[in-house]
Length: 533
Image 1 (cartoon, rainbow, N blue to C red):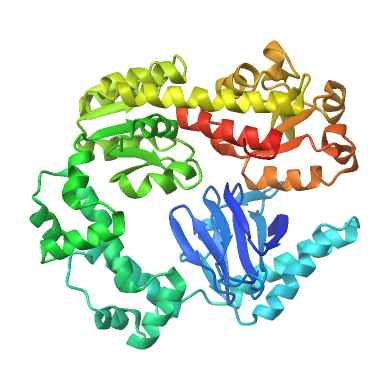
Image 2: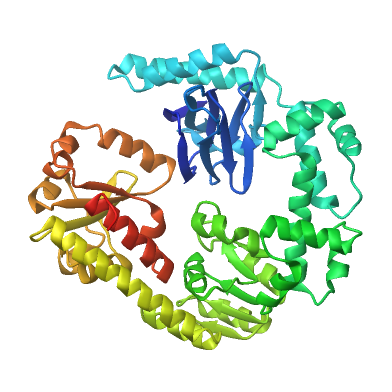
């Protein structure tokens, strides 16, 4: 049997759903508008004739498509259904959870026959699931099981002849054969579409032409080769599929704004970062791009977007450093000249890292001390000192403005929500910024300021002028948060009624690094003042 744990319909002209962790498998169903689905590093433009499957333990995010005239754009809406499979047999006293991977299509997509009927069913399930009537809850479960049965029994997943599968085959072919002399006709034949139609649908699906995508793959691979070998520019051009090195140089400069030779000069050292994505918050102030670093669109979204294209080797940052053995193996293959690891990495990991290259462990003595220490090692001390000086100048301006605008003592409570538990939360960066730099007063003192479970009544008694809340981005917590923020008890809190509640994002508010401190300061200033100085 299947059990529906939650259904949500999110919508809006500018729809954006931050990358979240799927605690249970999920069906993601586009209802209206142009919507893109990002699963880990794969971005897909969603088709309304499809139902998409997000596997348990994976991540997904959603954004609406762009349109030149927002008034003409159809509002984007998508249904997200979290569920589990259960099974049993003779001798079982209770049902046990069944791995959904064996039951879902390997491609992760169902093709449907009637999108209009599916949309009506989704909206009906949503209304019944969120009803106060127990019988309607039961109805929602029955309708969901019927929906899932129809998807699995009556509707075939995409076949190899399907348009979307054909385009995906082309994209994967380009990823592995970028160094060959590829033509539009060859790629169209691979997709089993006519050349004219292939050009149209590829651009519609991926936002660029197939030839432009080929150029992106080639030039990004060229970056890796420039940093990862001593090859000549002519050799790099040939290795990525360009016969003319001068044409390659023009393409490279047009895409990245810098010539290949200048790029190679600015990035000579093969330095690798290991153990925490926050390490990237230390190299950015030094204008230094590492050769290898942990990156993930959820757990390091800012660095993934800003630095990802320039970092040749991406280590796995799923749940920060969950896949340690795979990362160590990948790092050994990359052969860096130096490895910088986060403070507190386990001893067995450090032993393995020292076998790969000389190792530098961050001291863990505060972000300023650590930044200066790293800068000395990389011969970047002037850059670090200038960055720190500019940071404190901004802090001074922010503090003076807030002191004048707000006046009087301001008590701040920082908390996090995980599943159905709200707990007091802070870390060195939050404490340093709010209570040392901005002179706010903590609503909780001493050991009580972290991991103490908070009730609505306790929050009321603390009488903080500001409540800053981090909501963990997983399906269970987000479902509880939607119920909590609509409850009368929550809405009755004075900090909610008087506009003192602020929802925080995971980044930068869970990271302690120079760049995170800078971004927390900027966000906090806008949060408390509502304008810029």
